[in-house]
Structure formats: C-alpha cells, structure tokens
Amino acid sequence: MRIIEVITEHHRLGELTAIARDQGATDVWPGPQDDESRRSLRILVTPKTRQPVLDGLQAAMGEQGRILLLPVDASLPREEDEEEILSGGASREELYDQIDRGSRLDRDYLGLVFLSAIVASIGLVEDNVAIVVGAMVIAPLLGPNLGLALGTSLGDRELILRSLRTNAAGLSMATGIGIAFGLFWGLDYESKELMTRTVVGLDSIILALASGAAAVLSLTNGLPTALVGVMVAVALMPPVATMGMMLGAGRWDLALTAGLLLAVNIVCVNLSAKLVFLFKGVKPRTWLEKRQASQSMRVYILFWVVALMILAAAIVLDNLSG
Image (tube, rainbow, N blue to C red; front, side, top):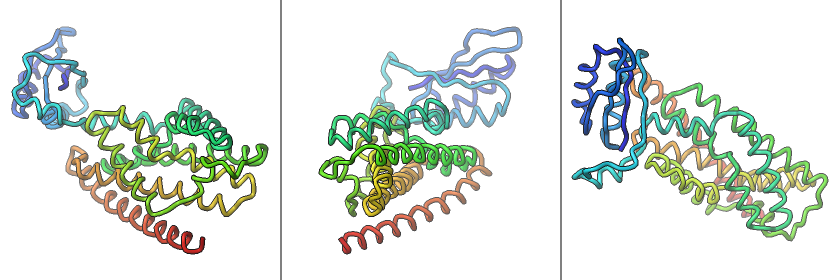
C-alpha cells in the first residue's frame, strides 16, 4: 500500500477528495496546513487503485500543486482483500523513477562501468567465477536497456534517447577497457570463464528472453532486489569485456562470437522487457501520449523481432560452420 500526499490550494480539497474516493481510495484525510492558501491531502491506496487515483489527480491538477508517493510499511487493521494488496505492482510513476535513475549518463554510471569492466576482465583472465559474478552484480548495463523498453512503452523520446546514449557510452567504455587488457595482458585461452563467453547457441536466446522478462516483472511487482539475480543470469559485462579482449589480442573469430552473444543478450532483454511492459499494461496517461506510444511500440517490437531473427540465423550458421 502507499500514501499519496497532495499539496494544493485549500479550496481544491473537496474536488480532489471526491476524485480519490471515486477511484477507489481506501481512505482520505486532510493533512497539516502549509500556509493560508495551501493544504495537504493524504490518500491511502492499494496497488489496484494506486494508478487510477494518481491519473485522476494528475488530470484534475495539471501542473498546479504537487503529488508525493509515500511508502507504507504496515497498515492496521489489515485489509480484507490482503491477496490483492500483496499481488499488486508498482505504478507508472514508480517504475519511471526507478528505471530513469539507471538510465542516466553521469559520473556514477561511468564509474561503475569502469570498475566492473576491470573486475570482469581480471576474473575472465584468471578464470575466477567469483570475481566474474561480482562484476555482473555491480555492472549497470542492464539499466539503460530497461529504460529503452520503458521509454517506448510511454512514448517518451527523452528517455529513449537518454537510454541509447547511456547504453552506447557504457558499452564503448567496457569494450575499450577489454581491448587494453587484450593488448597488455596475456590471455589464457584455457580459461573456462573466458572461453564460455565466446560460445553462443539458441539456448542463449531463451535464457536472455527469460531474464529480460524477469527483470521487468521484478520491477512491476515491486521486487527490485530480484534484479541482482537477473544481472547474473543475463550478464552484459562479461561478453563485452571478452569481445574487447579478443579484439586487443587480435582474435577476430572469438571477438565475433563474443559480440554475437552480447548482441543476443541486448536484443532479447529489450524485446522481452517490452512485451512484459505491454502485458502489464504500462502505458501513458493521456490519449495523445497513448497514440504516440502505440506507434513507437509497433516499430520497436518489429525492430527487435527482426534483429532477433537475424541473430538466430547467424547463430545457426556459426554452429554449422563450427
């Protein structure tokens, strides 16, 4: 459950209270008065009513006032329909806030990419699975891919472009660090962790699709801690580091298959994330935004489906030639 706190003009409390009750709010009560003209209104909502109440308030208020979404650790007495509360998911605004933070190109993001790329490269060269797993967990490369999927679901061009820039910057930096390791650090081609990232099969597609879907389900169901497992399951950092190292070492054949594995992971994560957003009904609030998002959604899904078909054909050809 959540508490929606609305800060608005005093004379609008009655209107907003009626909207909240019409949309199924569990409870509504006035908060403390900020000054002579402004007042706060607090609304208790379940996961099922959270999005309708938020949309109704936004439509009525426009750019006037402020809406805050506050967590509720516990509520007594317990609601009769406890299963509905426990099975509910995050609102559109909560999803945007979580995913947007992971899609921003800033010093923290680049720092994590830099450190995780170094850790991954060392783990791959030393054939140390614990180090590689550690690099998977701290690598932030999953964030901008989820941002790209959410941006197309909402028709948000700014989020789409920001996610593309962040993704490109992170992959470029990780590849560059891998190339440096390949040039100046002797590679052990007996390393199981390293050579595993140069093998790609149709099972890699299934794994990446399932992991991308699990990432979005964990977010939409309010379970972001499950993302740690997703980061390990569909790790983007080890294959991009492997591709860079093979390029630095002049092993173009192995760099190609590592790059193919990386491409499969990126395409499958984006495609499955988009399909889960579609299944969960994540869409814009207004009619015009929904129309724009619907157009971008069709193009987006078609693009990734075609890309996946091309990659699957490339995998089959590579396995046949091998």
